[in-house]
Length: 160
Image (cartoon, rainbow, N blue to C red; front, side):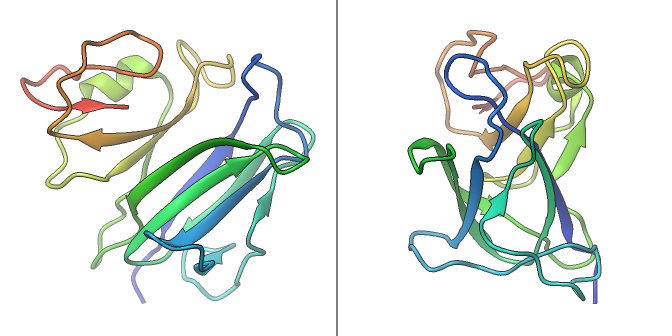
């Protein structure tokens, strides 16, 4: 079995506070049917879905092949964000990538298809509160705002 895509998380609420006790739900894309996630890269150890975040708002899982809808909720069930068409693993390649900061995000080569997710550890440095999950959208023409829209160092598309 190929290695599965890692999906590390550290989440914050709308006020920038650590989302302790929050939960990340992984669904079949376009549905409310929970989709398998794993504790290991080989897909041998299933993980609980939703992924409950620890006291520092962190959690790690591995995604299987195919597309996911991922929803983040706070500890009382209020939705914080939702991402659609997130690609898990495909073939022998790991699709979800982790980078240290936003400078590394904007320096990445363009992905071959929309929906590729990159987890960013922080704005300038890992765990400084400015990171999160960003998704490639080649059709996005929104201007960069250095908060939710980042334009890469190559000519087309954007992460949001």
